Length: 627
Image 1 (tube, rainbow, N blue to C red):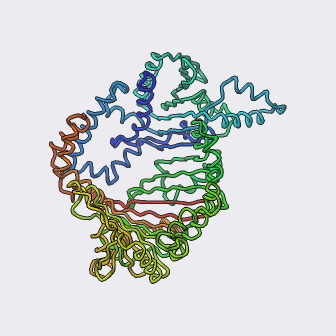
Image 2: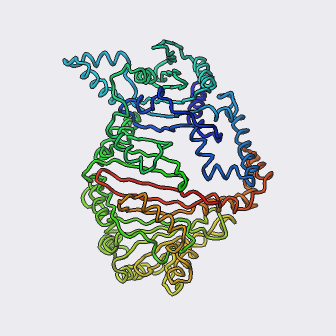
Image 3: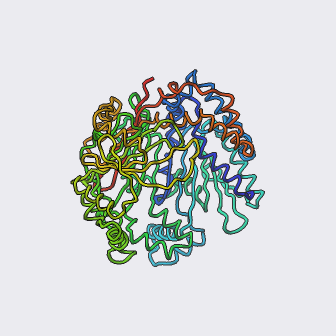
């Protein structure tokens, strides 16, 4: 890496990771002199993420299930060893750039931390040319022309905000290290003072390298990459600018208003993305615009006016709550014609066993989606593309019409489930995918046609009184000891066609359907999550509902980490890899506590999604673990 890129990457990493401290410092009082980043960023910002308060984040993290787990006397020695290993790796890999310890780095931020990407500003000469291009010389007309030209030039700038408060000198020392390194690579330093705030500009030695600017005000450091990026932010802060900000943008406020939810507190984390204009700049900068961009325009991606989300700490009931909203202009045509969610009963069918790791129910108009997808492809593949690419080949091979025999027989409900198949291996998470049928007999006739045309492709057997079909596969030899051999198969179970990659999971599904195994619908955990989902929906009817047991995924990682095979593999990798070597040594030093010590800190989660005229909304939450 050249002398410029290394320190820049290092300082960028600092801005990304310093909010993640585990300290339980007291949260600062709200500082009215420090504006929120949306009030300082330009209106046409294309990507933005903001942590509201680093001090409060540390407090919330300590009170979360994860924080309480790390403070558990049974787990603290292991957690401390993990942290010390990470700190040692940081010292070896990052000391040259940062010059401070991991503890010191993580302690720096005390307020908001934000990162943003926006169109690059025009050079001074370009702005002069814009002013001379038209007869209307009013300030407003000039601002409009400059904004339009700014969007058209396709350059990208970025800005970083870190509110450090009393730790601002430590933060400035990091910036000084960056400054020294880039000056060594040929950058020229210039300074100016604007209303008692010193603005530092680092000018590149040649074209193609970005300008760098930064300033410190009221304990906050703002660093900009790109011409006048930090300068214009400072103008907004000092109320010297008449340009609109991100906070004034209608798309931004619409998305954020949908992501506040019913929570009483402010979200700790917010983000916003303008995918259309971000992709536009990336594509046109990459030189493929003549080929790629017309396709993107034809798909109607411009209808996505913005997407964003938020994350909250949930108080006494919830460990965390998140919201995500996509703002879409009506009508839903073009590419968006394939988005056809519907609503209905989301209760688990009787065949879903009680011990699944996750369960998801989705309602969708598959027939309309199929037809509209055909219309989208028609723009690029000619008339009736699905007929040529799918319908006719399948009809020729197995005598079945994909649309008339399969798609039109789907009721519109799809269910997915995961199950941790014992013994635990790398791919122990098995899956089941099921579609509800309008006519099970018609589906069996389709299977009969397939078997008649391709008699050697499937094996037939009976599981729990239900006929199951499994793929015939050649013997590929022995799999590694830590891998499960997938056994893909499917069955018609009542009004459902169920696919799975595990014979054992299909067997368990038939037993649950027959009542020999308890069902998810009767599990108290699911009932609790389901009741909380109802409260979060606030009267909206969801097209997606999901239930997740995160402890099952932790169980898989725990058993893998504790297995001799995994330890042997990491030890072998450590011969040539210092990171793997340190992890191996840490695992040898520590016997993992019993899994029950971990499990009690992981509560189930719920997810929901609903459709509305202006877009789609997705929400999720994790219940607070009851130790």
